[in-house]
Structure formats: structure tokens, C-alpha cells
Length: 167
Image (cartoon, rainbow, N blue to C red; front, side, top):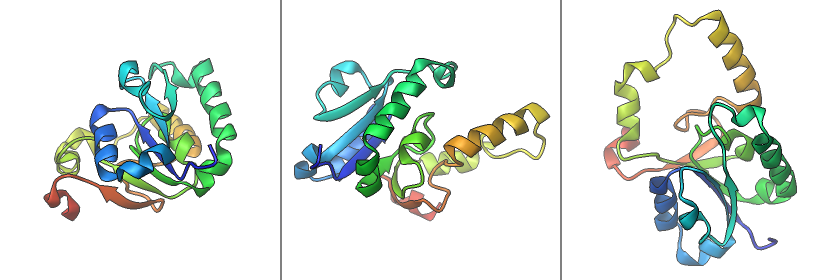
């Protein structure tokens, strides 16, 4: 594990493929992968250094999966501090892996930035219930306000559509 220089945090085949295409082949063995259960086990088992996160979104933060992930992050703590991180930043587990480190955003889909801007239900509403405010404040305290690289920790974005660079 001392040769790990990169960390990839993904939960879709699209973002995993984007990372593998973006990085040169010689960096593959220097990458620690944190992959979610949306990526088939038949794919994740072929990755060199991988930690698979099997979670159900509704119960992830109340089950042993969260504890196991926190133990793995503690195990790889020194690596995470020194590594270059590439991640989908909105995942339930990505905030834990990214922590306070800088990272490069991997897009979720072509034109995701354009889609995000045009879909009104994804943009913040001024009318938020008290329950949502409490839930969001607890969630953001522990997992950060990360979505599509709109934070100071995101240093760059890997995207496939040039027009998204203007978003």
C-alpha cells in the first residue's frame, strides 16, 4: 500500500471508466479505489486495490457499513492525506473519504452541469421545512456541502463535454 498515490471514489461505471481513461495506465496500480455497490462486484473485484462499500442509501448511516467505512478510512488515513483524490463528490460516502482534502471531481454523466442548472428541483428552494433544515445541518456538519465541485476543496473537474466547462 505504500505505493498508493491516487484515490478514486466512484459509484457508477461511467465515472469509473472516466477515471480509468483519464489516468495513464501506469497509475492504475498506484490507485486505491473506494467503490459503491452500484458498480457490479464482477467489475470491482478486478481492480487492484479496492474497498467495496455495500450500502443501502436509506440505512447506510445507521448500520455497520458506516462503521466499517470509518475503520477503513482510519486505516488509510496517511495515504488519503498524501494522495491525489478523484471523486464523485455527492455520494453518501464520498465526504467521509475526501474529508478535508482537496479533490478532482469526476462527472456523473455527460452534460451533468447543464442538466443540474436546468432542473429546478435540484436547485435550492427558499421554502425548506424545519425537519429538512435540521437534517441538512447534521448531514453537512459531518459530510460536507459537496455537489458538482461547488466548494473550495474541488481543485478541478474531469468532464467530457467542452460546453460544461463554462457552467
